[in-house]
Image (cartoon, rainbow, N blue to C red):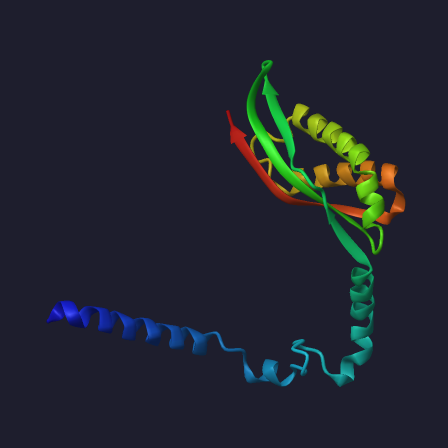
Length: 169
């Protein structure tokens, strides 16, 4: 008898807990009143001039494309002339709208330059320890962006590291 009641009791407790959490995390009425029909919290018609700048940034963001490079990058981490780990990463390039084909046409040269930057980063110890540290990744992304801008010009505004993994050997 208890074996049949236990699943029902657990279901009731779970539903009750979910409803309680929903009520506890519900936004205050003052926050809901400021919500406009588009779902943007905190913006109403009285602040329309303030939102103009953010809309300009959104339009600027709309003028960007993200070009995912076809293959991953494989970078060996060498210590004492032995490979101690392999780092695998995928990169995307943030470019001006309509410039994807130009990036694909220059992909071999970009990959070569990116590999050189990645090997240099590995040789200075950038993939040892906390290699996913924000400071470490920012240094790497800046170096990759600079080399991409040398090859593709100012159409490149940034590099995105979309995947990164380290496998110790």
